[in-house]
Amino acid sequence: MKFEEIGIGSQLTEHLKKHKIEQPTQIQEKGIPIFLSGKDFIARSDTGSGKTLCFALPILEKIEANRGVQSLIIVPTRELAKQICLEFQKFSHFKNVRAIAIYGGTSMGAQINALGRADIVVGTPGRLLDLLERRALNLSKVNVVVLDEADRMLDMGFIRDIEDILKATPPSRQTMFFSATVPEEIMRLGRKFLRNPVSVSIVAEQKRLLEQAYYTLPRHEKISYLVHSLKKEDVKMALVFCKMKHFTRTLARALHEQGIKATSLNGNMSQSQRERSIQDFKDGRFSVLVATDVAARGLHIDNLTHVYNFELPMDLDSYTHRVGRTARAGNEGKAISLVSEDEYNMLQRIVGLYRDKMKRLEKEEFAKLQVNLKQSGGSGGGRPSFGGNRRFGNRRDNADHRSSRDGRGRSNDRGDDRASRFAKYNS
Image (tube, rainbow, N blue to C red):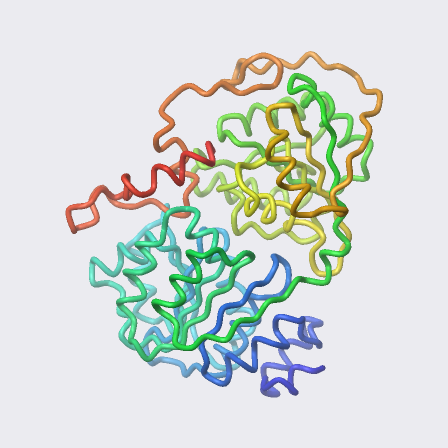
């Protein structure tokens, strides 16, 4: 099937061909006609299935320039906001519409100035709500709202922010949720804000090219075996997940000392440092990026060959999002987990979910390394320490930063209802 057959016009189709995009993916084939019909919908779609163009193309088909903010895309992280904004900019030249990215950690004044000329806004919940409270963002003309990675935003404690933002848009808007998983909380939000939504469920074809495996080993052997595996495998680009943000730097340094080009990504880094780490990784200066779950959310890297779970996540949805970073767009990929005894309960749940797709591999002979973990807060044997303030220990791993008060007498961090969500990630 061609894009013309599902309602995309000739001008936009020509732009797609210039970027060697000629056939829609499954989610685009099913979702674009629903979008163009004006119906609300909830789409369950795996990472890498082409969902960005599923909503970007019909928005560009329908939008008219210089009529204020007409389309709002809400995303969990600044990296995803920037990526989606670039996709709009790539294909919007023929209509002269302007898309801008709104997120925390950067100048609010510059974003306020840009809003005066914006037709499409892609933003994280905290910064969007800040701008609404300052009356710097006018959503009265919005006719399309998209929640991308909706399940991640709920996991990060953004549900109240999202509800407040949706209430600021016209009731007549068209609303779409895109989510890799559809838990009950997503359905409840849909019942509240969507009108007779159509449900679409797509499991991306490239998932068949994902090889999942795990090794069982003592925790103190994990770093040594990770080094062994990275050197044994044909690793071109690998994303390594661990729980604690202070440990990402420790682990990256340990890998670097073993001759592996590794860098880290965590919420303690400034925005410029985060962007530099990501760009250096994409440019091939490093072959391994060590990150926490929250820091890596919304991070899309082409040609990622491997995902390593140095530590298993706390829930199944996080595992699904982690392994979805590889085997994208028809490419092959491997997801390898290093599992110690204290993680067996979580492993059992993952194996139960993926059944015969998750293979246990026998541990090979490997060199036992002497690794110094004390310089960045780690403790002996590869186990990071758990000291320090944990209540909001990963707040800066969140998508954006809020001002000290939200203007309605509530703490900026929504402490009472977010602390429990953040605590489980320990990042």
